[in-house]
Length: 230
Picture (cartoon, helix red, strand yellow):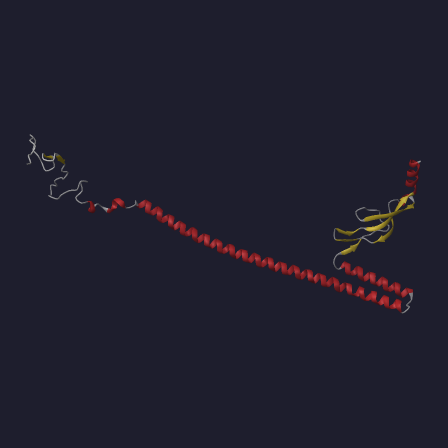
């Protein structure tokens, strides 16, 4: 049996009611809308009718995101263009390197062929000298042939920039000469190259080989060393 709780206040549908049988306390959270429409516990007419604008991003955030996407797109275009230019430059560099290498090889082969062609007359002169010696030719003829051969060989060396160094009559220079022996000379010729055994050659500023020479030694110097020895 249910019995309403006695109170002096005027009860409304939102007040508490007590059920004596089960002693269960029930709270009625409903509210009355003046328009007669029921309201939810959150106070709104209907949760589903809540404005969607509450979940939308602010306009300035959308603008920033749009600008970011635009900047990323431009950056991707720039990177793609840069990669294209890099590949193109790498290809051009490789082609240029290969072209220069081929040109250098062709130039080297041309210089080698020119040098060999310059040596062929030297070989011809040596062959003629041997034939003349075999036929009992005059010594003068052989000498002229040999002299011509030497001259042709020197001209062949000159075509590639090789030149001989001056030795006989020059002052001894350890950078250009290799002293093989010495000979007594007058004091004014001390240190002067008196004979050349093997000619020296150089290519530009590079010494290919020094000249093997004989160097004069002044008598006064010899006498001084002899006196010190005694």
